[in-house]
Length: 237
Image (cartoon, rainbow, N blue to C red; front, top):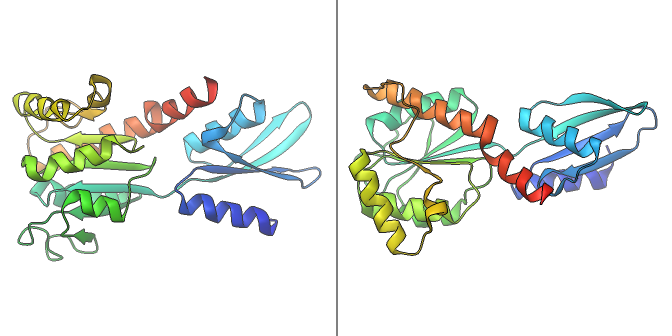
């Protein structure tokens, strides 16, 4: 790998951008493809699909063979609210490959005893997310039921590129949440990004079952119609 390529990969990682290093197996020539700016060539589309699948692969086209090495940003799960559901979801998210962080200014709930080996921030969500911004491979899950905590987190997420935004609460609670957010300037299309009531409708009742439904919905968004559909819309416009 050329030093310039390595530097570019490291810069993309710091900026939380997905890139693919394409290496011509015959000549050794290499190209670094920025997925957010990928065009419509067969190689770029193959790189896009490899990044979407999160899997490096071989690609052959018109007699040329390429190795596509995927460099996706780390998966990030920001959980707002140190609830019982959060305890289970943090464990599941870690097992699924996410870097999990808990954000809750209520120090009595957000403790290392309740969330071992998980990063905890006692800042208010807008401050915490300003220090560690959400990226295209970030999911934000709001669980407190407290508008003073959840709403700033949701507003920050709606201004960013995260692939999943979810908020706990009944249909009535969610309707009130949407009304508050609309009153501060968010459009219907903005608000449609929020999954509420949160999680796939699998009849979940216990904290563990609700956590399963949330992680399943996150996975669906990530692997099917999440960040990749937004990227595709930009690259084919």
